[in-house]
Length: 377
Image 1: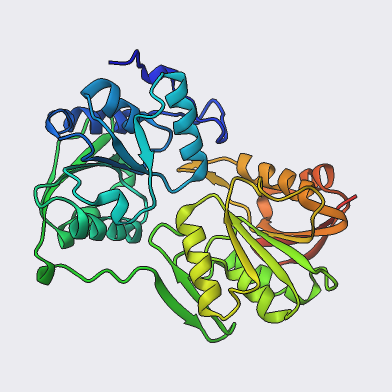
Image 2 (image 1 turned 90 degrees about the vertical axis):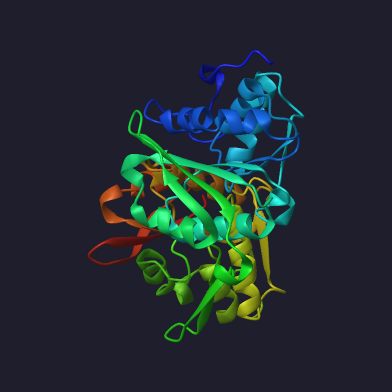
């Protein structure tokens, strides 16, 4: 076995801070509850889903002897952190990363799962397990008790024959589910879901893990009210942290000559944004890219960036991602280009936008949100 300790794991290149951890009690509990199943699983049949920074993947390999592990992480920064942690622990090459599809789950005997907060995300995962995994598959799904609900048992139970809740430990708990239900007894997977919003003339498509699903969140809806004023002469724009691609689709529908790059580090967001572009007939002018803070785009290459930044990192309130995205926007904007941002007014982002991007003015405000436009100096 490799010389492995949880203490060696880091979150980098994701945001790091004293209140943000790379490993928690739920990671340890999942591995402990699944130890016997992992140890007896044939090589290539252990799958890890939702591993945040590598604790589950590397722990299964180093502590319990799993071989040729397949893993899926929604966040690109999670994939990068896993790779960096594997190198640090001398475990490079012991796992492969996959999309959330049959290549990940075909023939799986053991699935280790960090429970997603979204029931839709859990439904999509459970449906794929039931469709593609081995008939004797064991799913060990864990999380922090405060983020779990009985509805999670019900979602797993739609697709898998037995679901058992184990005793909690250190404010964490696991659910153990086994045996896919017969095809005729489980729901047919319908992901991505779609919804047409007649008031905006937009169809929104979403995979289970995509933020807001097929809804249009209030901040984005407020931002869309300023669409016509956004850098009207722009030829190339970026929907930064695009989510389901609502802004990218709306921009291209409103401006027939505009090319938009929709970028996000979430695999579910990227797949959703691509589906949204296709559903609205603008896939020829929307380029969808999975990357970390527009890292694949050249400096000074776009005229307009549109951003609705998150103010959470996982379950923790933290504005680090927003500031990272402000810096990314400043880098990719041409001189004179505009960053249009919507943010919860209490966050008071304007000074940070002034420092990072350039002169910033308020374009719109309501009881909850502020829209600002920052001009690249």
